[in-house]
Length: 459
Ligand SMILES: Nc1nc2c(ncn2[C@@H]2O[C@H](COP(=O)(O)OP(=O)(O)OP(=O)(O)O)[C@@H](O)[C@H]2O)c(=O)[nH]1
Ligand SMILES: [Mg+2]
Image (cartoon, rainbow, N blue to C red):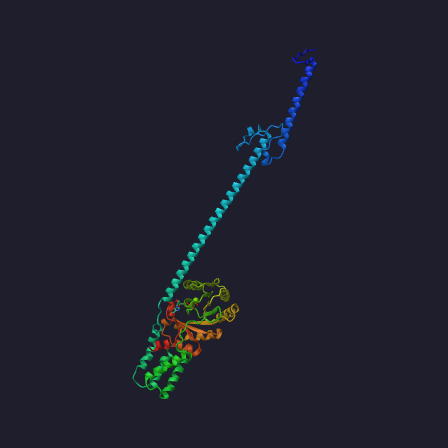
């Protein structure tokens, strides 16, 4: 027993066992307090993050206050372990936020680059289109200039084109009419001889002669000047088909759209060249034109037509070499209808007319064009080479029988003395001569005027 003396009135005496017991009790109490503190900390760490307003709220009693938020710097792995649970949570949230922000920046960056790429592609496309448009406009301008140049080229006059013919049979006739003697059988016999060698055809020459003889018999033609005037009058009547003398008109474009023109003739007659010149003329009158390359027999024919089309500024429908000409013409007429073209001109092959298959082929082409555009072709132009003389008349007859020709184009008058063939064609076939060719230029394809023709012949 240890006596304890107090200054106070209360004096307690404790044994050694009592002291040891108290010490153990105090130690146990301390342990309980420590455990309670730990438990409280764990609970806070596991709890969901506090709302912003709650964060500033005071910690519950007995629980130490949360440390102030750390600056947003990265926590190194070594430091991570030393962090308190609430610091872990804050760090975790900071990292999540940083990750979200970084992703957001990356996405925005990607979007910006995509928009930039799109803008760049749009500008490049716009530039490409602009250049293409400019090139097209420049090509169209060049074509138009070329067309105008070709159109403006002055062609020969019909008189110049008929120079050789005038120098041929007409100079002999003029010499005969220039004489002073009265018209007698001798003059008529000489006239007969000239007319029979003038490529106007036997029938026509005979008719002209008989008419003159009859009038001489009736004493109407007493002198050569009168005989000349009578012959001139008769020829004018024949070539005008008893119609107007001044009918020098360009190709008539009827109301049907497209107005389809089928061009036929033997090879080398001048079909393709005539089509080129015609297309230029029709374009110059403000009509749109489409060409059909129906001559698929000759390899270079399509290219020749394309060169003209390029010059004139007209599209061409072309088939493969050797393909069916009827199908090419069908396509051309169909395209003309679909595209709203004013005039479609179809070229055809010109193998010798004596071969029956050519006529059959052309008949088929004509039928098929009608299937593409009902009522077409509206015009079948027969191109004849004047240098063929009376042969041209024979050709005209065959083509007309097979196809129902609506008009004649007589080419190469400039290169022959056989211009009298015009008279024979008109007289025998009663077909109108629409154009005469007196050279290679566009303007050399001249609308036929009976008066001009007769004036040029008898000048
Ligand atoms: N001097 C002159 N030459 C012409 C005239 N018309 C056509 N030619 C020429 O005649 C030649 C034949 O003309 P083309 O147009 O190829 O004849 P084509 O009828 O199409 O001939 P194929 O395609 O073989 O059937 C070319 O050299 C033309 O330049 C003309 O009025 N006067
Ligand atoms: Mg041709």
